[in-house]
Length: 150
Image: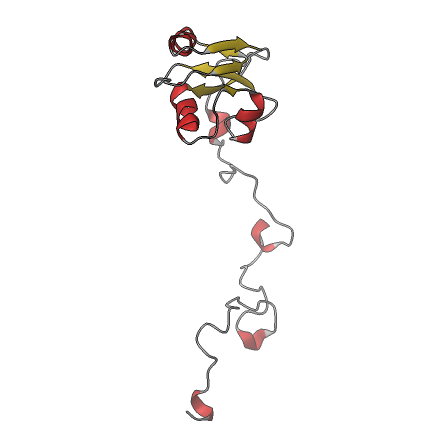
């Protein structure tokens, strides 16, 4: 090692940025690698999302269709196999309600919970929810449990 081949230790330097606008001698002075004129050469330029160079953008070319029902109720579905997994892991023993759904991140406190019928339930549980599908209710009652509507 001598003065002609000194270099920093591997991984000790991070800054790989071009130093723009620091004089002509740097090779990145003058226009600072932005070219001449045009929107991209100006400070504060930012292209709008979806801008296609003046061509009619895709979101305006494609027609609108359908409608959104403002009175729609969105239910957070919880399946029977998910509840059975909680029983198998020893998280719930006799009943499951809104606090249990929130604690196990199956729903948030403001969501409406609907119990769905996928999987099978072997444990006798008191299940409390806003809604039940017919198959889920039948499966809970067949296992000796109780389906309570909130």
